[in-house]
Amino acid sequence: MSEQPNASVISAHYAEIALKGKNRGMFQRKLRNNMMQALAGEPVEAVNHVESRFLIRLSDPAAADSCVEKLKRVFGIQWLAKSEAVPRTGDLEADLARLMDTAKTIARADAGASRTFRIEARRSDHAFGLTSTELNIALGDVVQPVLNIDVKLKDPDYTLHVLVLVKEILVFSRKERGGGGLPAGASGRLMVLLSGGIDSPVAAWMMMKRGCRPEFVHFYAGRSLKEASIDKIERLTSGLARWSPIPLAIHMVPVYPYEVRAVGAIDDSHDMVLFRRFMVKTAERFAMRENCHALVTGDSVGQVASQTLPNLRAISPDVRLPILRPLVGFDKVEIVDLSKRIGVYKTAIEPYRDCCSLRSPRPELNAKASVLLELSEKIDMDAAVEEAIRTSDLLKIGPDGTVGS
Image (tube, rainbow, N blue to C red):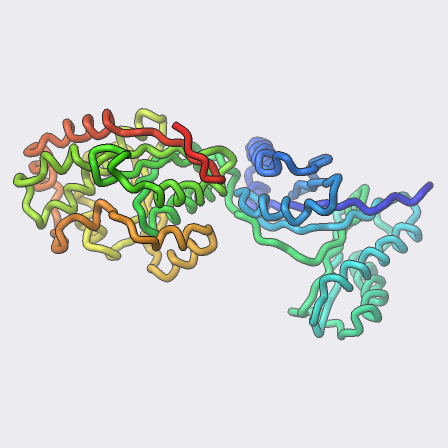
């Protein structure tokens, strides 16, 4: 039998999906579809499912780095590795010889300035002629002279991974972190209240990681989009769209329907919490119309005045949809760190005329739901919500910043 050349393969390993029992197939199909969407235009030759991973085979090895970068933003993938595949021919001696050559090549390229190393071999196919321990020893014996460094089995500087499958053996050393969680679209739709700050984009990303498909609603100052400065909001949404297999929809809502009713009628201390109520009620209407199952906000308990526990409770006593607050127990440092990982931090900290920043600097900290319900009737909150929806605009934003309507 003639010797087959090694093929470039990306191993995309999932974790949580493996626990899904009878529904596992649905999650696997969604993950595969999302991966193919992310890799559109790349030289993908085949995608095979092997145990708890997908193997993406490339016709052009030079595209591996580009493909890995795209797959790192696909939710459902726990980790990725660029691998070399050594075909199994049935001739154990010949297969081992090719495997040893491949292991030496990869180790020489990737070990860098490491001072210690180990081989971590695992057999998916237990019919292979060597045990995992025997394979570790055999490969260690040929790699050690190449690297000329010590073997260390616990916490080495460098690890060479070997995975024995039925038809091939994968060799790799660099694991890349994936998005984790569940595939996009696996958990239903949500309506996210998106501000111009750091918190709400991170909250949206965390729910996207759970397989939810978000729509967004943003409230802007001014009577029309022409009067508003929304470039930052478009770029924030575009940053999140890099983690989505499809463009993201955002409902742009002017705040004047609330303001014309509240001016002179609402005292400064209640203006902030009542305005937050207006936003939540408007978002709920959009959510019901778009078949969303819940609302999402970037609230973190006690971070600002409107996010005290009494105020969070008072704002939404009659809201019928659940309000999810994935950042509720996070501090600002944790939120900032996540925003940097997501890739939205630099945009989020740019100056922006956020509607909430225009409210009273001394809001009520212990608002009562009964008081807000009375004030809502006083300004005809339902009419304000109706007008806000009627005068809103819908934009669809892709990962490249493309804006459509």
